[in-house]
Picture 1: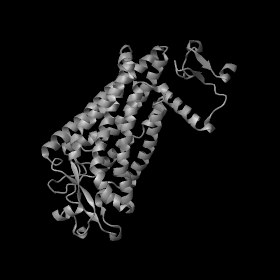
Picture 2: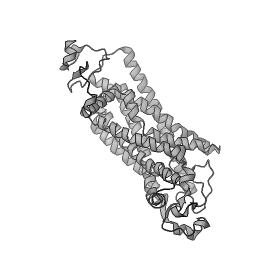
Picture 3: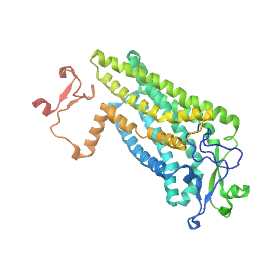
Picture 4: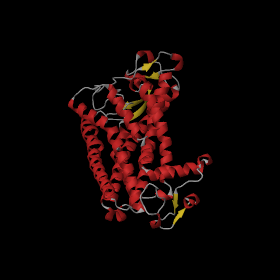
Length: 405
């Protein structure tokens, strides 16, 4: 199932796609132009038909804007010296591709549905978007693939840190994490290499010559449309790559891998807590990161399960409401936007470092007379709720208020 094909048009009328086909939104026999207000110029019906501004378009705008801001804050916190680790490097990679994904969704769906709904920015809808559309579409697929496999890489890193601590010192290094980031990006580009060949931009005049635009808009000129290529409608390509390979690589493999790793990490953390072991500062950091990862994986699974179910129903020939397609598209966008909230809720080290940045940036947030324990870089900072003897903290420096108490 194609989860990013809202601009897909079968201009050659060589195939007919039902609503529950593997190309859910490729169900147009021709491009219809809206000429209800000729003074504003023609509007491509593909935006108004497949991306309703309310609620999907507006929801995508709000979520992408929030997500981009949250990802920028996450990158700022994760790049801090005190959080530097293999997990931080991989999470920065995830944050980067998620941000790219949100930007492409904002440009392809968010503002496009807004402009179409209010019939404004005709130049963007009929010239700019059709020209950059094939490239944005390919980048969206690459970012989505990279986000999926960055999540898997982070899960493997946390599994080793929690369940195989003896191996973690050698395996979970920033150098290996950086190499993994490059590997994930290269794999994502290679896996989606054919996406660049699935659509091309053509002038509207070419469609007029082929008779694939309505007669009312036969005089339209100076506009462009995205035209589906022969590769994209090839039966073998659709059956092998678009359905089976995509299903295995983007759904089955990630779901199974992340479910197993997440369970192992959860059981590993539970065992540490149950045994009441006194953790080192590095172990505390790894545990905090692992809890964050559990939240990320759970959200990932929830946000992707809709399209997994639709894919199975689609292949079985079972019809479903377009609502579920809209919901799946929105959930994928939400998945790339909410990690910042997960980090804040589940990661106390991330949360404390974010608070420190906010206090340093905004003096009005600075608290006087804090009772926090401030420690050196050797053990970073220690949460006062952890049951640890202060004397066991190496080179700890207590704040004035802590000493007086």
